[in-house]
Length: 200
Image 1 (cartoon, one colour):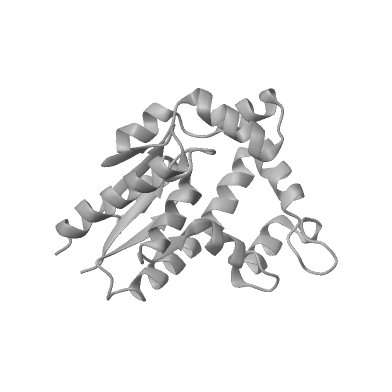
Image 2 (tube, rainbow, N blue to C red):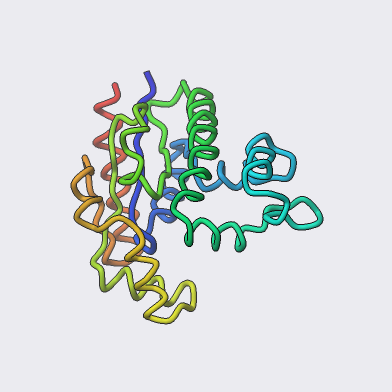
């Protein structure tokens, strides 16, 4: 039975680099951001439901979702965010399960899931939670540098996510990512070697 390892972490923690390293090691990665992006394609069932719920104003003339406008709406209105989540989350989970099932020959599959703290109860398929963690100072510096955000903007985005303590509370394993890429790759390799043995 293929095991499912959820890779999670706050913005700027290094989740993407960790997932790339797993791919290099031959471990399949199912990425929720990629699934959500694909579901935002014009004409998809999820987008038809979004249009029925929120109206044509959320879409450009070519049928593309106006992400900025929808983001504005759901950040200002908790009920709207709730409605959007009820449309998208079950569809995303179903597609993730479908993709995971395609890798039944693998000992384990990585599920890249940024906001796991907020939805852990919904993800019954997860066998192990691997947290990519770094200090809050490192996180802030990375977010500012990568996105060219002001310190205030970066802090607001970090504050909107679950706290470091909440993420640590649900983790089965932690990879510390305050060093360089070489150090990170070695830690991922070590996890892979140890976890692969538990799957035999």
